[in-house]
Length: 246
Image 1 (cartoon, rainbow, N blue to C red):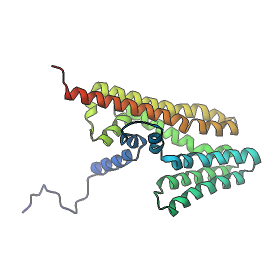
Image 2 (cartoon, one colour; image 1 turned 30 degrees about the horizontal axis):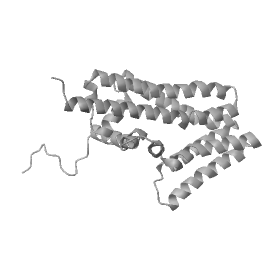
Image 3 (cartoon, rainbow, N blue to C red; image 1 turned 90 degrees about the vertical axis):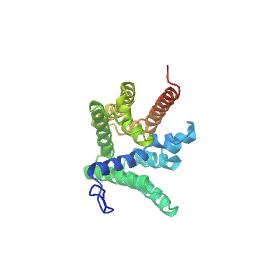
């Protein structure tokens, strides 16, 4: 007879186990995880980590088309339809090629929400409202993780490397991961600090332009800095463990 302590095959995972599993899945989908699978950092690896050329185009083109279409025509419905068509085309292409739909569908939903807000208010600047909420949520979550002494960069690195929470026992590691997390907080803060005044002053062209400029062009360098720092730190610790000082 088996022990009562042995879980049966039908036993459901505990909430903490389920949360850990979801966190591991989320970390595995992160750009940092994608870079972690590369032996050296180059343009090709960086582009692949951000979803490839198609993923980057899916992130940039709908907003760019909306900006250009509305700037030229001043017809909100036309600009919304043009941006929506681009998002639908990306999704159709992925369906035809039987590729993962997550990024395309997520982008399509985001376009739909943005378009709905702009259409309901008749204000083209409201197309960018969801982006403010997204940046704000990330900013608060990252800052909260630092104050809770669980900086998210450290959590993600621990999950994707299999180190778990051991980094929390090292003060130097905690400080480094907290510093990197603060850099990501700063990125989201800069986006909001620049874009919100433009939104409230109805500066549509400037808002749309800075939305693009502060997107991937700001995200990619920060991702590289994070990856290089984490990689160098892990190599240094591995060397120290192999050749401890006597």
